[in-house]
Image 1 (cartoon, rainbow, N blue to C red):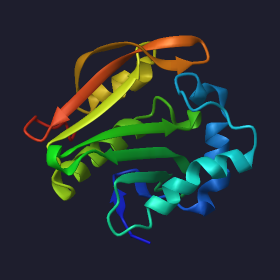
Image 2: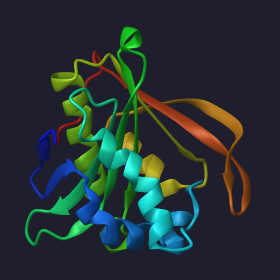
Image 3: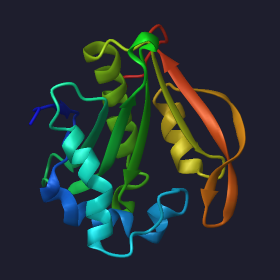
Image 4: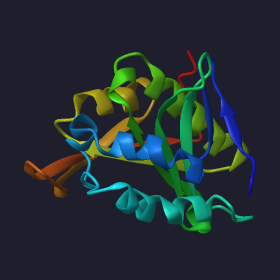
Length: 184
């Protein structure tokens, strides 16, 4: 397995493996984290395992195209959430980020801290040119994280996300390697 860790002041991001199944299942089972997520709540732990098996398999490849990280709290090692970095076509040197944070860690800066670290990893280690993200327009917490991390809102895509509440518009964000990054 490829060993990749991204360290921040309060967190460690490491590639997930099957030992994270219970923590990921708990995260995916929370109605609060599902509200703006199109994945849906899994029926059981086997469904969660089916979802994450491709992620854990990908993390073992010599050339990873879809990084899936577990976020852990440095002080106690507890699982905070998930972070993904999905690489696009090499020619375009871009990737898309996504994250899902356990509600116990909302509004405490963990998502912003992790996103800034993943952005730096993308530009400095992977030599990307552009990193993109999207979020439901009503997901205020998420778009605040994107903006605090230096990402710029580029537009709005209409009725893109099939959420439980119905079709949702999506804000589109990006940051370029040439943009000033927020590392504070």
